[in-house]
Image 1 (cartoon, rainbow, N blue to C red):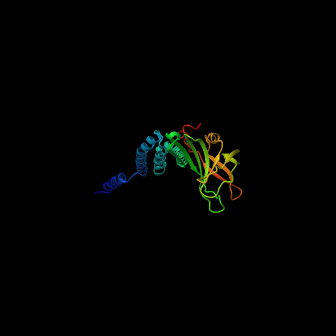
Image 2: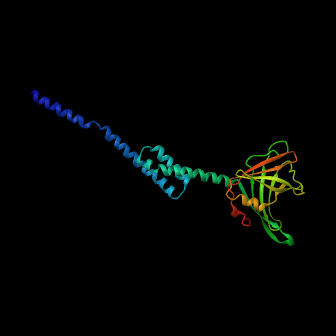
Image 3: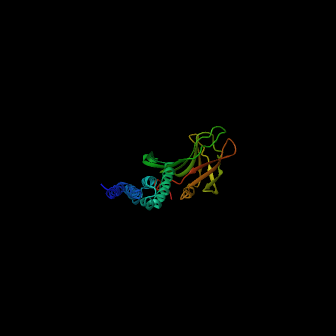
Length: 243
């Protein structure tokens, strides 16, 4: 083999060796395509949940796509919808929370002349306990009641202490920061520590669309106390006679 032949063989070997060397750009492109394919498959769950307005599920699937497959065209495609789903999921969770604060009861009762009837009630506890007797703060409850014989009423109930409202008193009632004065009265009974808010219909109507209700009332321990209620989850249809 002469020098010319050896040189040719060496050149051919170098060319073949060059063909076996991987192309970095091609490898990156293949990885990107694979990642996009996985993102597109995962995004089908997001698209379905979003279309059905299942915001919690859409937010969860969107989190996977936009974090695990960040930078892919699919992740960018769903980003705005994912952020929308996050906001609506948060709003829905808050609505469920405030709805759960209310309790509704339908109770069979004996009426005058031996007839049977049903008492309906909607009740909620103050978001923070209130000191009403000079000692430990305790729960304060607001109740709306519809009794077939006694009619409709709204009243506060304490666990300890007492209202300084025998013979009537004035209450400061606030709805989302707007305050008005309403009449209160303490019934002459020891069966419960309760005080009526006299214009129950007006109080009920005030709750429509409201988020927070506060009632300032006088107590026997001295001075006044304020109970604040998160009322935004009220379901009026549970008390059909109230308008």
